[in-house]
Image 1 (cartoon, rainbow, N blue to C red):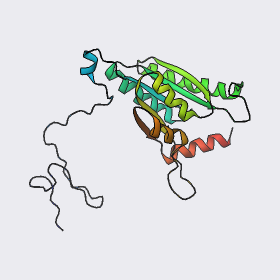
Image 2 (cartoon, helix red, strand yellow; image 1 turned 45 degrees about the vertical axis):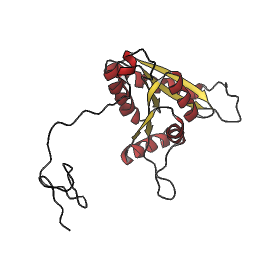
Image 3 (tube, one colour; image 1 turned 90 degrees about the horizontal axis):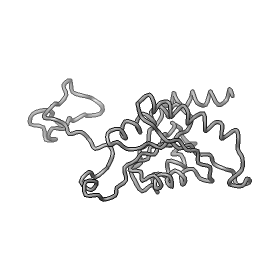
Image 4 (cartoon, one colour; image 1 turned 180 degrees about the horizontal axis):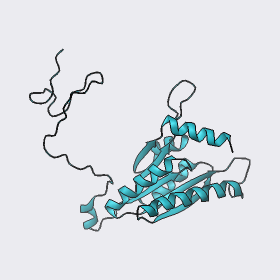
Length: 203
């Protein structure tokens, strides 16, 4: 079968790639419209109609936080929106929901301080929250509703299950199914996961 690219292509302006083989030239026909990163209807805002506009980002204390916070701030800046950085502490069933968990709280505080510093470097103020609950995924969705969020961002470490399939975290899975707004996942790399596992074993 003969595949055509550029002028006269049956695929329009799209570049046809066969089995990973890229042609030597790229297409630059016309201007590409900029994507709407944060789904806010400005026409509704002008009419005084309430609409969701903020960004909630899940903080995990891993390397992914850098990308998660950077992305949240970049998107929020374009719409003059607020950013909420949320760290979840899941309480075991054997403990009361309001149990004192100083070690987990200290870990959460340190992670949020680092995340807030990243936001400051991007000239953004971010509200930080520690949420203590049985299920962080559910709490994250609740925070998105509370803060009128148009977007939730979740970092997803690279992790494969026993069968070789990609392991979608419970938090990401719940957010994808239940959040009332857009959900973006920032997937980590195998190298990042290896570094994180090495750091956990040496503690």
